[in-house]
Image (cartoon, rainbow, N blue to C red; front, side, top):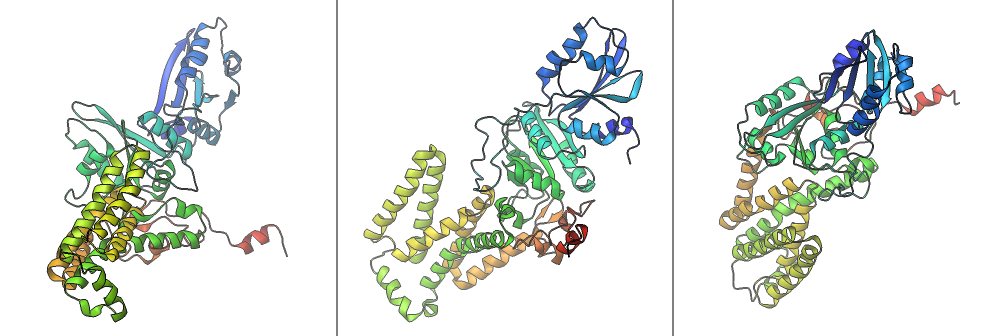
Length: 490
């Protein structure tokens, strides 16, 4: 419990972006305290400090000093809550050496920083919700987080990594919520890092992850400020790097990569429905073409008689076995996707649509593939890209190829072998020491309120238990009856 102004400033000083300095003007010492990431530095030096230094009027108390400052909204305060709120919103707290129990709050918040013309999210687009995204400038990203999470409990710890690049790397977490073990793990892994150049947070993701030999992402990577705000408030630890518009956070689980911020902006029934659609799309994307290969190669008997005729007719002129047919089409789709991603946006969209239609039609006319397979491959590609996380969608695109190979070699048994290997691999994965497929294993029934489906906010009041947060409750659930009693409604 904070008792005085000194304790409040000491608590804030835990964050590396909190600055405390002392200057002497006309034999009077001034103590300045502020968050470096949220103030306007030009206004600090030119409108505040320079003006005070040039003033010929002596000041002996806060009232005299307040009259000298040419900025509106200056007020004297000794209230701890008001001081903490003012500092986090972009005020400078000025104290005189003669009275350290009271000071002036001068609002010089940088309101324009963090909102440039082109910082809307591009790769994680959503119809509903904020569009603000991180940029390449580290101070701007810290400013964005400070504006969204207004509390002195939000701490930043900065390190300089890369013997040649001297890249600034910041660990962000909320003190009192994030588990100290997770913070210490991230801090220690970054301290042990010996790398010459840090190009992006994606580089840090691969180096400090628990397992570098897995195709699955073990850290959440996002360009959206609202998603990272949700991660921090849940108890995760974020890593921000200069020169990167993406922020990573952990520990995370496999289900988190299928969540979209849009799920929480829609009613829980709709949010759960769209989340279920994503999971179904992922299952279809991984298994659809392997099942086609296994059926066409080994298991004709499972196809209904009414469907068997059209399938045989569509494959009459196809010279390749099902395995090569599927491999050819899947590689064509992946090639189109890669080409579209590397070209300018408008050209890439045109290439994806026209190329897909033309190549698919030409392949059917040439007898290289069947109409049914074109439909399956197209839906399979859509299912992979329905995932909100680009890294996870790449993983899904990769996983289908080993499954196709196993299906071509062993049929349905090969698909079962691939599923067992995949599940075993997921069981062994950890993110910052946390099991990757929790709440399925270890089983945590309470965490199912926000995993496969999203329950209403009245059931998601607690933070995920797998994060082991220090403070579990996110908000207080109040029933309508309690509200009616407050207003004496009969």
